[in-house]
Length: 273
Image (cartoon, rainbow, N blue to C red; front, top):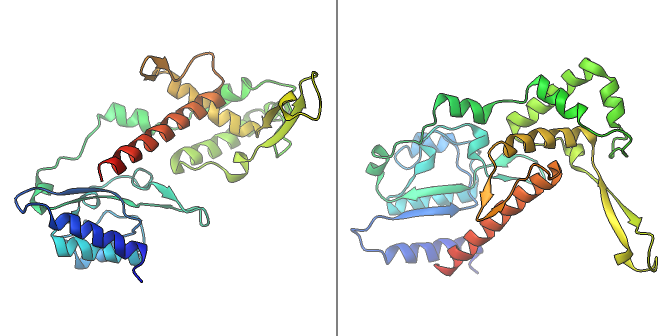
C-alpha cells in the first residue's frame, strides 16, 4: 500500500516529467521535511549550509528527489536568523522547525539571486527590543481594580514592586521578543460567564463571557500593539488597527487577517493544482 508521502512524490514527479526540458521549474511549499547541516557535506550541490533542523526521513526523501531532478534547495543557501527561518512549532516539544522550502531546477540561478537586504536603520527598527521605559509605561497604563489572571497577580501588585519588578518583567519581555515565543502560562485565560441581568437565566444568550488574562501578558500585548499602531496598517478601505481599539483586539485582528490570507492562498493554490 502506498503511503501519503510516497504518493505525494509520485504525483510531483509525474508533474515535473510533464514540464518541457527548456522550461524553468520553481517548487515552493510545505514539504513536511527537515534537512540538516550534515547533509550539506555530502550534497553541497543540492543544499546549502544554512539549516536549523536534524534530518528526518522526509528530509532524506526530499534530498533524493532533488538529486534525481537536478533541483536545489535555494533557501538553504542564504543565512538568516533561526527565528526568521522556522515556520512551524511542534505542539509536543514546543520546538520550531523549518518545513517550507523553495526548490529550483537550475543551480546556476543561485548565482543570480541577490538576497534581499534591509537598511541598517530598518533592520534595527525590526529587531529593536522593548525598552525599560516601554515596559514601565505599559505597566502603568494597566487599569487597577481589575480581576487578575491565572497567576492571581494584580496590576496594583506589579506596580507596587517598583523598579525591581519592572526590570524583572523587562528581562522576560526581551526574551519573548528574541525567541518569538510567549511564556506558556501567560497564554492561559480564565473564561467567566456574566449574566446580563435580563431574560431567562437558563438561556445561554443571556450571558456574556469575559477572559481574565495574566496582567504581564496584557503588558506585552500593549507594547506589541503600540508598535503596530505607529504604521496605521490598512486592508482595502478598512483600518485594521485603530487608536481606540483595545490591544488584545488589535493583536487578534492582525492574527485573523493573517489566517484569512493563508486560507485564501491555500484555496488559490488548490484551484491551480
